[in-house]
Length: 176
Image (cartoon, rainbow, N blue to C red; front, side, top):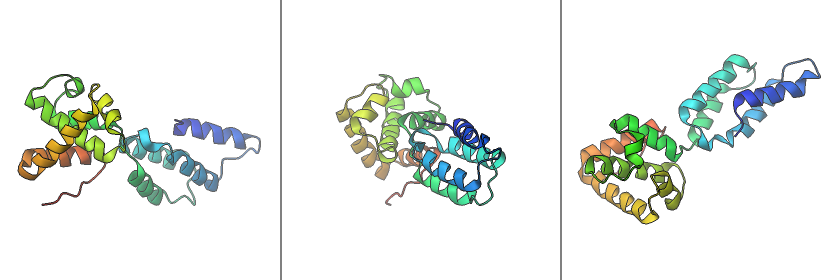
């Protein structure tokens, strides 16, 4: 994936022969093209990148707030981002979340993280299973069913789900 520093360098190289900065319209188009690769970037990284654009690039004509809203709405977290968010929200290390521990104190947060990953990353069940320590797709499916059931009856699980979803930049719509 190309980062904004690289994109900046490319655009500046293109316009160096003309002895001028890339115009805002070019930056606008380049940013749209760059957005297509945002699947593996966290919302925090997107926010930092957009701030970088605002500080380092002439943004006249580029409606940064609108771009920011579109970019953040379209960004999908990765399984890694979900695992990191789960570790922050629960205090359980990433290693324990993807490890073989079957204790409920590790398994429940892992199951919730798997559910968040399934709902927000767009990854397949086998891919999610691989990200969570090489688990089989049937284990992922079990986690999804278990968390769906527990969210209805267990406020702690429901809160954990909401907090992890929020930490990766999404607000779930829960049925009450």
